[in-house]
Image (cartoon, rainbow over all chains, first blue to last red; front, top):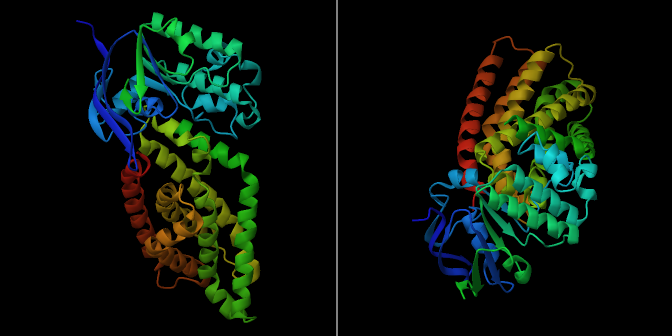
Length: 204
Length: 218
């Protein structure tokens, strides 16, 4: 029997009266790449944020890497990383200073995401695509066993697209599990092992 | 903890223009308070400690209400919380950085107080110790409340409303201890007030550290 990276059962989350995620259940074996597709507002981001322990579910339960996302969130966080819509970067700090919050040895990762030349510039001077690259570096520095990537291709140039695909391939080769929420369905479908569609917070 | 504290100090250094504005605000408050008393040197000296701490307290609300501004800009706080580090570490780093900022502000306001209120003293080390303890006593709950109100629209009003009632004992002890340091302490009461400050610091720092993750987690 395959070991599960994610085991979600009846997950639900509401904002006010609206259920953003309404009873989502799925299982994902370790080492797989899963594509999460769906229209705007279908619940992709909320589902990723629940699994990454950024927000609590209002119903259901889930384990990530074998750890309960509510009771053992520190363990979940130790083993996973989230590339969010938000950059999680401090505007007045440089790229290098931002990454130093995770690891001091960030030279290689900065080079990997193509930001070494601007490593000592404040994030406030970066374009949206450059910020995305630094956010990506943040994820890589965490060396996650399970990576949640929310719209990883957003704001990136074609070179950046290739970077994302390379990194996902590397993560997969290292045995990591990757969950990608995206509108770039055709692109991700080429390398995704599992596909999950969401509609109105439910599995389509 | 060191990385988090370094980040806090860097953020403060990059926004140091704000610290200058806060100092000017504090100095202006001291100047205006002195007008309320009149020209009597004795009375000015009598109230110097109280007005120093009121000036520091009012200025602190400006710095504390902005303490989580950078954290909210790109949801950076959420990014930090998703790292394996405990939320408590983030709280202590921020509260410590806020304390350091308030201590510098307090030290900068002392000469203003001396000039405006004719409140010179040779017990500078005692004054420094009181400023450190008083600032820590303000910034511990101030940092927690700043996190609570950081997403509120009226945070600059809400923060003092929540904070001021809680820090009355710290304010009282700081004023009394400073006053004794300036006016003289023949009954050796200063150490009791400083002990009280120390006790309130112990309570605030431990309680607020425990409560912080409940405040910032979803």
